[in-house]
Image 1 (cartoon, rainbow, N blue to C red):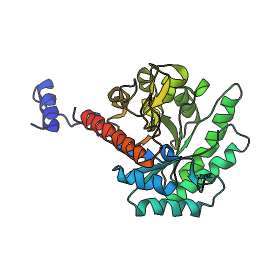
Image 2: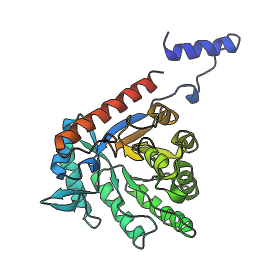
Image 3: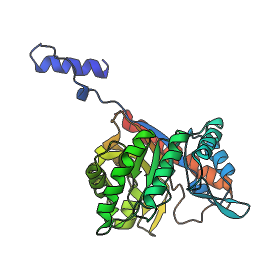
Length: 303
């Protein structure tokens, strides 16, 4: 007996033989998790090497980081004022390698003086490239909360016009929890402005357990920055499965949404030991992070 047959039989039993139609809520559709690696862990190396390493580590999805070393200099993956056509070219470069870009950084706080203009342009870059999400974060203090809401309300229609989601993640202070970020996105009240969940930041910045927190914002979550954290024996961010966060419990509240949801690995490194000084060492950690998340997802969806 498969799951749908079982549900139908149960409905018959409970209604004395009167068969009732299945409701949408009775059938849970698994979330389509897109396990991606950010280029960020490869920031000490070239962008080309980052993309090669991510593809070689078995990923089919990539998230664009911030900068990479090119001829000894930190060069932006995509400059904030780069024309949208440049983003389209970078996306084609990724797709030609078999990597689908799913997320990019705004690179600026919403409350910054030119925050509205830069976010607008980033959204247009993402739209031209077919990158579905632009990630932002920052601090809301005092009047900044109202400024955030005002700007995000103006950016929502821009995001919609470009078929992009603008997602806000936790970054300490008044935006340190998913609950706080969800309060902002609910006040903005636009379908193209939602929450990105960064469990590592919640545990790191606020020393707060992210598991109860995500339950308070799950309906607003549309992606994750995957980062684990340890408070012992040293306060340190790390890759998934190396820290104190239970990723089964973390992803469980959003495991059956029917949505497509990127899981972008921002930190893949092992705690306590030095980070690899050769790209092959990063490759190995990237592969381990992917395999760990795939096992977690398979387990959640097997329930």
